[in-house]
Amino acid sequence: MLLHIFQRLIACVLLCAAAQAHALTAEAARAMAAGDTDDRIAALQTAIATPDDATVAFIRAMADDAVKIAGDRAIVLQGDQGRDPVTGAPVAIPDDAEDIVNNNRMRGEFDTALASLQLLSADLQQRRAAVEALREESDASRLPLIDKALAVEQDALLKARLEGIRARMWLGSADAAQRQQAAAHLATSGDPATRTVLIEQLRGEEDPQVKAALQKALKTVEESLLWGERLAAMFSGISLGSILLLVALGLAITYGLMGVINMAHGELMMIGAYATYVMQGVFQRYFPGAFDWYLVAAVPVAFMASALMGAVLERGVIRFLYGRPLETLLATWGISLMLQQLVRSVFGAQNVGVENPSWMSGGVQLMENLQLPWNRVIIVAFAFAVLAGVAFLISKTRLGLFVRGVTQNRPIASCMGVNTARVDTYAFALGSGIAGLAGCALSQVGNVGPDLGQGYIVDSFMVVVLGGVGQLAGTVYAALGLGVLNKFLEGWTGAVLAKIAVLVLIIIFIQKRPQGIFAVKGRTAD
Image 1 (cartoon, helix red, strand yellow):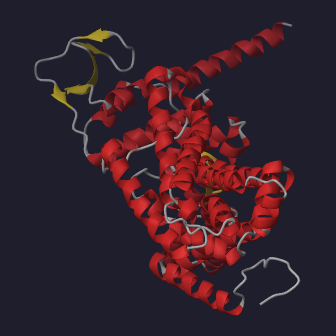
Image 2 (cartoon, helix red, strand yellow):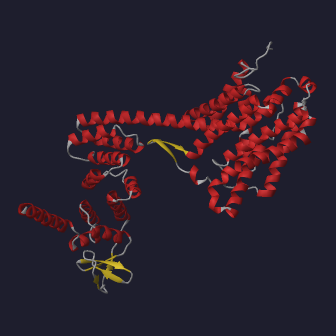
Image 3 (cartoon, helix red, strand yellow):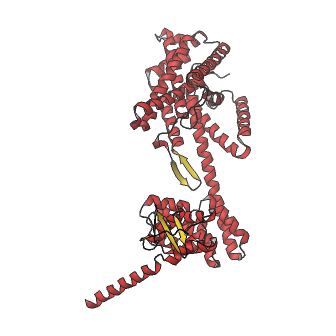
């Protein structure tokens, strides 16, 4: 028993001695605060290798320019008083005390040192911020602190990133075996910055074995990054395709089922976007605590605003022009100009901003160079939800039955007691309301302005024609196909040439198959 107590006393004495050995000293504080920049950095790196609370506080004070030099000692400023950096005791500030001089290099070292010290914080968010700040760090002098953080880190993701930082530091080692080990570890990294590090290391590497390991690691990293870029392009294409799908769904009804060439379709979409903007303002003013839910309220409002405008348009103009496509085209084009001017008069000619709710901020990090933004992911899901609703409405409801009946044979449907004029109004209002939903979605990925619809009207017509007139399935395939094709072509040719190439491909396809991807089934085909 006495032996056990004696051993514990010895351990306590040794721990106290170790703590005393690593505690901040007046000489270390003076060395970090004044002198040549290289010497100050060396002293700083020595201090943070085994830091204590006084060291951390002193580094923060230097970063805040709250330190003065008086002879051979440093003094920390707290308001109008001075304090000893080692003991924290109050000290007088001599008249000849000088401010420390921190150049940009020194300030960068302070920031990096403080980030390094946060690696040992109990707060997970602080540790994440510290790892993010050190992602491109390659100074081997910080290896002891990295090793210490790795020994206690429990978060698997942070631990993996710390191991990557350590491997980058190993690349600067004089030991060839350690550099080779670092190359093998970095081969598993999908960080774009790793490629730059490996290329720079290859330029100065002389050991043939290490050079071979670096080349192998570089090839692996580039292949991983290439897959990330391909998947990013694929998702961007699906995102663009989902927006085209939302815009084209309304046209698939008004043009595909009813045969009306509505050049004001883009402006109906614009009305939905401005309805979303108005709902944002209503929630900001009257329901600020529930602002994150304004978009949920904006969805039915955008639908109803565009649907009512579409109903007025059909009852007031288009019902007199059925069977006269040229007159319909010119009339709806004139109406589109009038709606644009109306919006300019009410909301102004400048674009207005619509904020994302907090639950649409951020994204899903799948790879180091692949993040899926939540607003895009939600829009894709929203587009397919609207598609499912439209498909159900057309194929399973009484209104859908009437629309299909009037589309296939208007006289017979009328003889069966169907009010064809009312069905036309309902169908046109439905297509217009879906355009409003598209505008609501578009408000979450860009600015809202009077010309919003002009950028999508041609593409949406191409989607409907390519998919097959009156075919919802064809609209889906055409929208997603054009979106993905456009994004992949942009990576090779640029945005303008990609648009031209897509248009040429569509023209060639329509020449070979004028009925589109899905032709309407019938007894004969012309």
